Length: 155
Image (cartoon, rainbow, N blue to C red; front, side):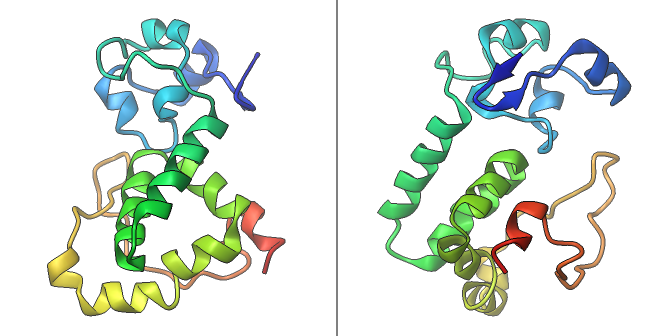
């Protein structure tokens, strides 16, 4: 069964991964599909009332994020939108980066990230944490081996 090109979360897969329901599921950035959860999935995973009523495909969500980014005049603001997207929905973030790396890489890497580092105190966001609640760890250099597969072919 497909939904916007993405397999639906099924109960077997979720139980194997010890996925929570409701708000806890939405906080798992690798599992959160935002508005791409079908009405059936929303009932199954206790998401009713936690998301807007609209159901959107992944493509529709990508288009919406692109419109938001196009409205931003400053690369720093675009970075903050992308950071929030990654903190909420990693699938959508990486799909966006893979779909248009020429546009996204300057926003999530050089030169924008240099400005972000210089303005760290001003632009601070809550740190990313692993699902077990521990800090995500010290930053690591992004190498081709660590880069998401979809981005490797563009480098």
